[in-house]
Length: 285
Image (cartoon, rainbow, N blue to C red; front, top):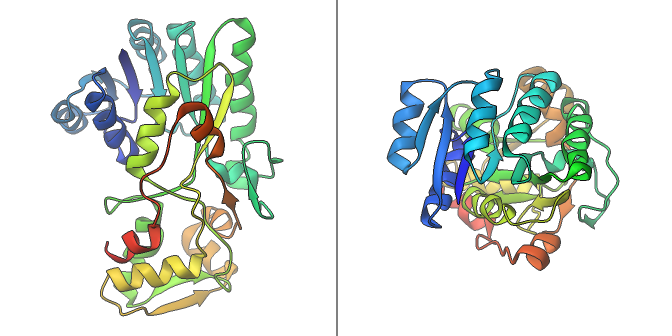
């Protein structure tokens, strides 16, 4: 299969291209500059120069492909919908895999799956309308699929690295928010990449949460990171107000208490995460 990927030079994109190439797929990847082009070429993909605002480039690339995986993030809802629509126009009845996120479920009150009610914090609420409109195109014979990643870790990158590991290394202690008893739905970047590949064969309008099924507390994550960074388990609590000042609106999402199961992807796609001890892996960072 020939697959067009956006965000291919990024954290998740690089892992996804690697998984696609390993599976025998031919890949074209959108890149914004020469550095990105060199990176995706080394991974085995053909670089396509452009940005998410270049709708003709997106449409044309999608029209040449057998499937599309959209990993890049647009600046706002209008830009995201325009990019998604252009690629859906191009791919037609082929699979179009769109990226969402589990934060739209808000606090889950126990372990839930894709049938859970939606209660997004403000910083991701805009996704709902875009995703609804993307999936609605299944009614006209198209094949949209939505993947909702959990909080991604692995390979010394991602949001945990940016907002917790790096600041903690500089401060000499890893922070957690509040009492640290809320849970995060984690997924390793390599497992998530494999889900995107398998999602290319999913049924139209299907939604899959991309999580490992292991949901440790934030304080447990902080302790593991502290061990990995040589801080001997040192952690400290910060208030939500302080976190909002330092991190911005994303801090609200980090306070969510979420437990999710990958049961649907396991049952329908035979996707089984292999990284099922995130605390041990984070402690060896």
